[in-house]
Image (cartoon, rainbow, N blue to C red; front, side):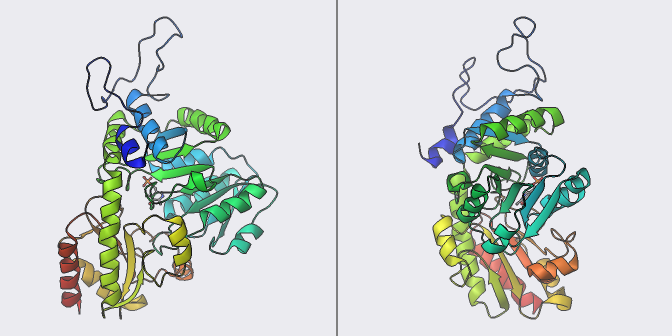
Length: 385
Ligand SMILES: *Cc1c(COP(=O)(O)O)cnc(C)c1O
């Protein structure tokens, strides 16, 4: 079946007891056993829950995976999968992954004896050179945040596969509607379902999907042992969000493509970062790897760089349809200043190295009328001049 159908039906069927078409929210923490040790598939809701199981099956189907595991947040999913590593193991990680992922590796895993090398994965030779005998995982996130650099999943996986090292791809920004990393050689996919998968900014959640039985067995053990599981209600909401993922992603990308083009032509704008732009340095790879360029755009207003970033601040204050907030992937358009918001914990020197200007603005393009969104931006440009 095609992904649009799977998003609505995978893992789901009318409830056998009531005929309910939508998956029931099973809040029970425990399940009756026919006799000690004889249960109907569920015994305790940390170990497994019917609502969660349905979400896990549906999300797995979208990524082309046999197994899905749901977590209380994207960071919980990341933490759990990183705990499959042992002291002495080494991780190769993209140099501009999600700040929270960097923080887990640097502040949580490092003190536990896991070492890491952060590399610019657009440079494949540099990536290959980072491998050591003790390298046990590669962590890749594409497109990157907030610079929207694109990394070659297939080539990075090919290098890692020659070395026998699993690759985990954080597919939060793209979603399986744009790219399916498992089909390109990735061992596992991680999501913050807080973002596009749920899509309505009312859940914090995470997912791990994989076809690697051995890895899944370890992550499933840790999911239960460490216990960072989502509530049945949150699972229901994400499952409900998934049903419209295909339609939403098309509109996010269509709106973003129009806005990115408009920004590109705008004399007030110095630079636009968007995978759909013809001048994107990785446009060949983008054509090959991504079905659409997605819904995230970053840009710099002319004369609003570095120490004169106040114009960016004024610009944000003048918007009425865009909401100034962190996060992304919801139906509503959000706007933010990475240097003082999402990426404030990244040291200023590192931000400079990654090209994150203090005046850089990031937008998560929502599903509103694109005319209203452009009208809002246009008004703010005039007001901030
Ligand atoms: C938000 C995000 C995460 C972390 O997810 P939470 O649900 O906030 O814990 C991980 N990766 C990416 C790319 C994200 O945007």
